[in-house]
Image (tube, rainbow, N blue to C red; front, side, top):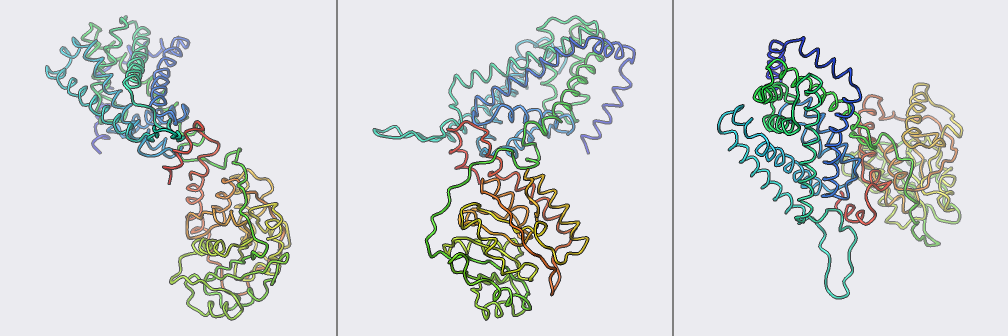
Length: 568
């Protein structure tokens, strides 16, 4: 509220303080010289290029593209949020878009930001002492000196933090150097000096914008004067309360220019035009940085085109069973028939019926046991996703040759189990989905058919697979390794996140046609509103999972092991 109030006051004050004709002439001159304006903006962009270079020198496992994006997302955030609340966005941008460890990203960002503050304070003290004395209270130089000391101290602490994060390499006789040493660069004096030099050069490039805008407005400034105005102005809004420092930026820049002998109307026009140019850049490039490079700030929109190689399969013994996982919640009228209709063998392998009783309050567990199934019971109802997760884990523990999941409501024909398991047993696929739309649908309500078609089209786009014809099928098969590595991110459902998870890990996908008939008893737990509220956020979390972000590799090969070791 305070920032909003100050912003409104600043706008009101500035509209009454400047002369419209002077500002109009300055802006017209800028538009009339697009080449010069473009060159000034290139210098401004170059400043962030130097900061990008400095960040990747400190943290070489951070790609230049993501460092550049994080800096610009933060810049845009500072122009739309008060109290410089855009600063944390440089951290969240990297952490949301890469699998890099929190500690390394935070320490390196603190080091670079402290270097930024130290550099601008140092420049203000070196090139603008006269401006400081004439523009601000007599104690401003002392405050800047304290800020410089604090920034240097923060940089030193961040450097120590980074050095402690480095993997320690063995040095004794016969020792083997571990990979991952370059996840965090050596925080040597040379590295810190190069970082400070790049930051100082970045502020010099930013000063070009002030110099060019002033020249376009007919105000001649020496390069050192433009640098002094820039340093003093930035130093004055270190704790800007308004978005983009509106008001404090103009006040500081105008006062500095007036001290250099520029008439007040011209000084205010230069300040306003300069801030406008920087704001347009910040919002334009910062908005682009939210989505470029991929993955965007909100995570990948879909799976990457390039997926990892297929994982090596587990060894399977000749007598390993095919495990049929049947989650159950209050399905006493159908679960016994489902178990009895399962084939006893598939490709000479025995079939084990494994029922996961998810907190049923009826006789579902007893009916399943009576039909010959093994029953694993949850004390309370945890949700379908939790039941499938438990079923896959139990099936892996049985050292299965294949795991087949199906619902307990007789919508899917248990006799078709072998059709699902066949591609897995043959080694042709790791994850098989029984497609209702490629097979025979005996009954499906029109609104459910429409909903299934729409969600399947969404899944086809998310996965980039044209052969995906049924994204919500309740009949699926898994290789032992796929079952062991499958991750279901929420308890409500499993369909979309499971497919995204396994495809992102490189498991081979296939579909087989199946028959489908609408349930004879009970009613589906799926309700459109609740389904979308649960599934859409889960899909976004799945796309932002390390299994997706790590591939294609975004860092050097020798850095990957150390990154993975720290990832959740």
